[in-house]
Length: 283
Image 1: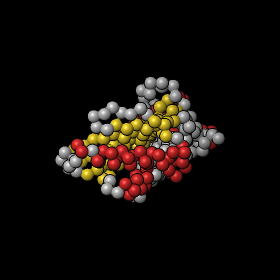
Image 2: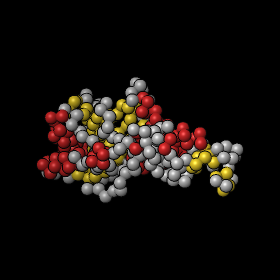
Image 3: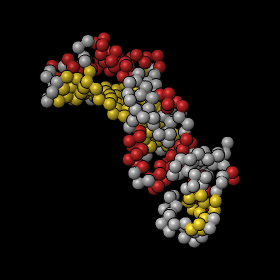
Image 4: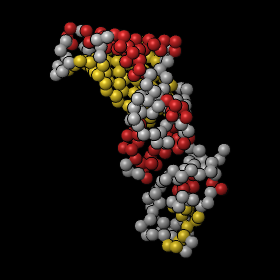
């Protein structure tokens, strides 16, 4: 349904953790400048540490915003359109079999969350369709643009040690590449179909250590690499410091780092921090 590029390999795995819940909420807005019904769909996946009881620190994994006008004149066609949208695995790359549902009309308080169970998947489609019909038929919305904002948010709890490694990896990438945070935000805002999500190897997120003893690392002593001088401008991409009076290590991909920096990195990763060249791993 959607033309898109393949997602980067380092995005977090959306369906690999069982400790999760899904909240689905729909709200009504209206605008006097136009008329019709606009359907706003926001889909999020947020990761938290299992030890973060207050859920204060979030690691975002998906943030998709989708806007589409809908035709509410034919209830059957409307329900079919909603069903197609909700089952679109590019937009929602995780199953919606079990979720908490809330709805809120304009000027009303939200309803008490209802639990929609596995056997009631069609119930979610029905509730969304009924809400769209309800707000469209309200007399106060005559001649106005009605917006139904549907938010689907999956919250995933990750073991504390794994979560800490994700954060450490993210901070490391930001230090290496000042534009990485923006690159990451753009990456998680793109569609990811469910088959890709299920097949994602955790790659960098898995933090699999490299088999250091098998690596072809060339030690650079005092700025000399096999008799060839290292450029004075060259620096370690991990700590951003130069190689003056310190040892360096060059990976098979030819990227060079301080020996201490790259060995510490390879204790938790099996790729070059610059080019993602894969290295042997400890099984």
